[in-house]
Structure formats: C-alpha cells, structure tokens
Amino acid sequence: MGSEYARRPWPQVAWLGLASCAAGHGTLPMISPRAYGTAPDPELVSWSARGDRRAFDEIVTRHGPFALRVALRLIPNPPVAEDLVQEAMVRAWSQASHFDPSRARFTTWLYRIVVNLCIDQRRRAQPEPMPDNFDPVDPTAGADEMMEVKERHAALVGALRDLPVRQQAAMTLVYDEGMSGAEAARILGLSAKAVERLLARARAYLRERLQPERDWKET
Image 1 (spheres, rainbow, N blue to C red):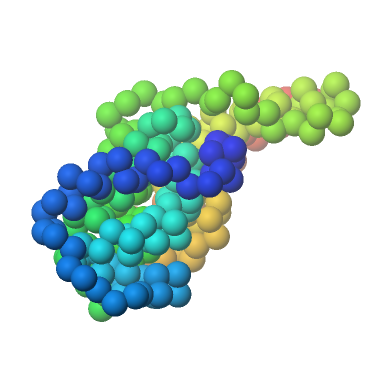
Image 2 (cartoon, rainbow, N blue to C red):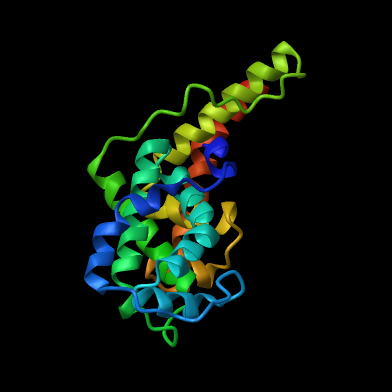
C-alpha cells in the first residue's frame, strides 16, 4: 500500500515546519565536528535538544521511511500520511529535551507519536479509498487469475478497513513490520496481553468476514 511512496527517498517534508520550532532552542552554538551517521539515537536526540538541526536531520533520514510506511498503512492517502509524519517529526524535534532514554528507546517514543496521530486522524475522518494506481496483480497472470486475485485483495482490504483502528495498528506493527508483541505494546501504550487480544480479535474477524466468500467461490 503506497509502496511507491515508501521506496522513494525520504521527502524533506519534515523540515517544512521545523524552522519555526528551532527558534525556541535559541542560536546554535559552535560545536566540534560530530559523527552524525554513526551516532546512536539517544546522542542525536540530545544534540537535537540543544538545537543541532543536523542531528535531527539524521534522525529523519534514519526513521522517516519507516514512520511513513506505517502511516501509509493506517492512512492510505499519501498526502495526509506525509502531513501526519511531518507533524510527528515536528513534535519530536520540539519535545526532544523531554525524551528519557532510560525509559524507552527513541524509536518506540517516535513511533508512538506517529501511530497516535494516525489513530486520531482515523477517528476524525472517513476511510480513504485505495490509490487508483494500486494493482496487486502480476501482469503476466491469466485473465481468470487476475480477476480472482483482484477480488481476493479487494475483500481483504475492505475487511482490514473495517477493523477498529487499534486492531489495525496492532496488525500493522506485528505482521507488516515484524515487531514483537512487546515492542508493539510499548508503541501503542498497551500491555503485551492487550496487544495479543487485539490481534486475536482481528484475526477472528477476518476469518469470519472472508470465509463465507471463500466457501461461495469453492461451491
């Protein structure tokens, strides 16, 4: 979903709103050369909190593509998803001084901001249609196979969109991104058991929703 956006170089949308936030950090002092590309996330955040925009640029480069990929799965509208990720990055920049590496990994902290913004957006807005140019079918497949794949995909997309947003977020993090249940739980601000229940309910709903169509086609 939106793979053409996830694969392209990370758009510089995050910096559109950061200039105004930077003013709150004051003038950046002279600093010695820093190895931004190899610095760990907590160090980059610490530098960012002191007004080092190059440090935060490295954070955007590292984690922007994943944040956008997750946002696109929850909000399948590229402009809206990019706006939400930009807002998440602006918040991370402006709140960098509040990040405590002893309590959470930076990625957990950042992705929680992204997911919560997407959840709020989903609750406010109607589901967005799939992009017109999205086509899951192998162009070399036969006509019958192409039709069957398209029908199966449409049914799955429809079922996924009807899931409650937290169930869909849990499935995105665990199944699409390969996170552990514990890591997804930290991002969602839930217990691991709560995430397991969300996944179980989502799987049960998808089986119930998709099985009748499968039975009908077999008949």
